[in-house]
Image (cartoon, rainbow, N blue to C red; front, side, top):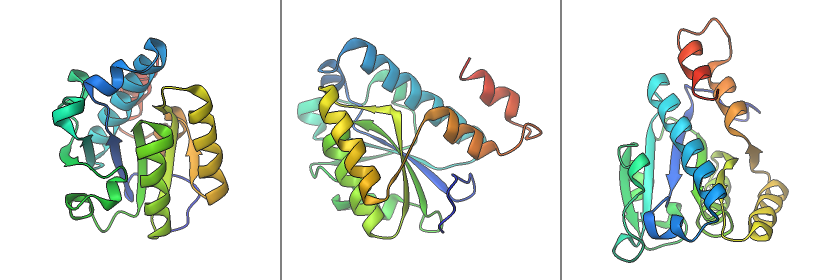
Length: 181
């Protein structure tokens, strides 16, 4: 699967570690955007039949997923920074869907390691730059540059949504386009 666009029938959405204590460490505007955009992706994915999986990094220390995303997909708890290295994560994926769309925290740690390992394992990985964040903007920018250099696709929420839809005649077009207004 080397299509340059996200395809709903081949995609899975993974929301990485958007947890209460980690989110609290982010600048408020960045945190709000990340949570909002991850929520939009999750809602669109559900409407389009795209599997959603979320992870929690050491939930005893970082708390649960933020309330706005607690119902988004299945949950895998982990201590590894890379989700792909977490024991239950690869088994929780739909092996027939080789495109992975990533949202979450922090861009330069768990998102980066997950994206690079999944890319290396043969998945086509899309990191949604306006649905990922780091505590420091320079770390976020550096991670996105590294991901691009490695061949990971860096995209944005609207591009992913409209690639999933492909056509304004899609039955879910109006509902999903309302999510970004």
